Image 1 (cartoon, one colour):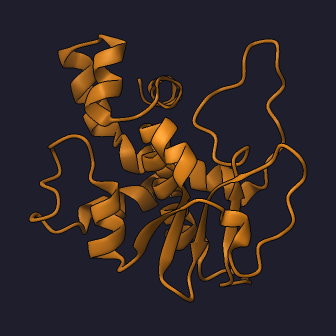
Image 2: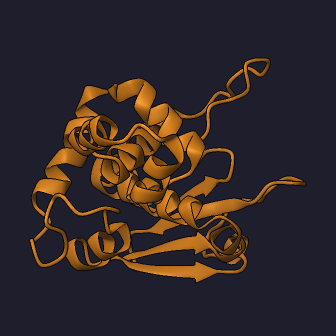
Length: 184
């Protein structure tokens, strides 16, 4: 999984300074998607209506999807309104698919169920649900993109207050907790 971390670092290294100076937080993930990769980020009410969307079971929904042929990332509007940091993570997750998986066996649309875009660790009493390796890699890419290791280390040294870290990186507590566990 180290290759995923390095892939995110390479993306951040090629972001023009007029978009991001490499230091200021939070990392502007939507501007990176748009200005670096030419991907339009759209908030959509019903992602299940996207071209070729697979059928969902009861109580399932999509968090986001990547439509490579259209150059678009679609984000679940209701999740984005309720949890703005989730929106950022979903965009990072879909960028992970674009950067890491796009040249794989299928360049078709990538649909990510809410359970696949996971920022949080399961409770101690819960088993982690099995996810496809591509989904886990996209989650790792999103975390590394939104919370670059060197900036997490820097910010943690300056102020270990957990809520402040979440606010500065504009991520959920669950995403920050997992990242701190990996980086620190």
